[in-house]
Amino acid sequence: MTLNALLNNDDDTVIYWGTSGQRLTNNWGLCPFGKIELLENGRLLFGNDFRHLVGYPSRAEVIEAIKQTYENLRKYGAKYPGIGWFLDTARCLYTLKTNKVIAKTKAGEWAIKENICPDVSVMKKIIEIRKNPLEFRNNKETRSWNKEILEWEKTLIPYLQRFVDVLELELRTM
Image (tube, rainbow, N blue to C red; front, top):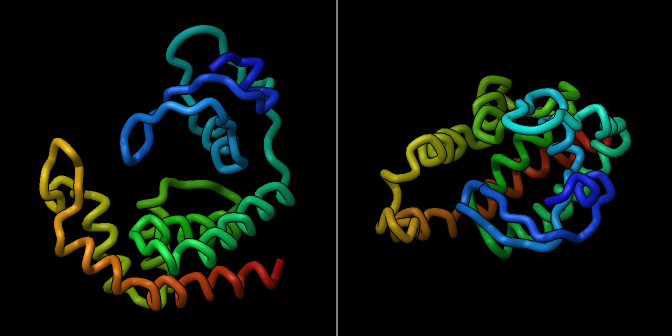
């Protein structure tokens, strides 16, 4: 991705790596979470450092991004249950309470420690899966989840909704 496209949120061809592997897209930008991670934890590997050109997101921008995540959690979390939604919720809560951003797995651990996750046993299993994903895969090459995990994920909707309720209450205080 060109620096100009990154700084101006312009379309550009991008290959990036995420939890589910490499992806190719023509539209990608830094959300407030990504900007904070880049500015506070980024390490230059090659070329000229451009972080001074990236503005730090305002509290209002961060809250707006969290509200959008909340809307997605309510809209899609009930239709497409998955462990990632819990970690997104935990990270949003962490960011609201601390004004900082951490990795999703660390946010899940934080939610347990802070006793803000209504269903601790569910979050503990999610963290176990997140830390040891290959133990929960059928085919390690195709990275598909085993049937037990897929069936378990279908039961998570009420647990997720309870956790998202915690986020909703926190957003109401903003």
